[in-house]
Length: 152
Image (cartoon, rainbow, N blue to C red; front, side, top):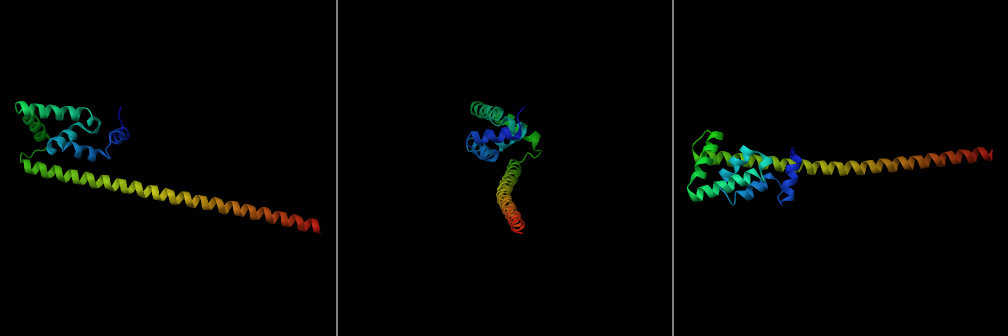
């Protein structure tokens, strides 16, 4: 079973920053509405297998007799009730924009977490240094007390 981490690793392993980056690349080769409709239908686990196969089949069928376009439009209309291509395209663009914003927010949160972790690590090191200095001062105090007792 593939997990979200496996999928994210698959994008990076194939030279993409994220799923959005990968899908944007596919949109340079295939119609964006087709890419996003099929990607939503199949889910991330099929991005490098089923999605690519369906897009290739779509292109092949569309070049030969147009069936690919009709079958993809049938899938799209099942997912998006509007038959207005412009409305579907606008909805897709809005969804893609929202996804990219969420992806950017997640990356910012990760960067914030990394910065907070770095600050925590520095504070922990300072605390350990203070503890060591306190122990050294306590040892010196004990040695001074022992020296005073010995001098009495």
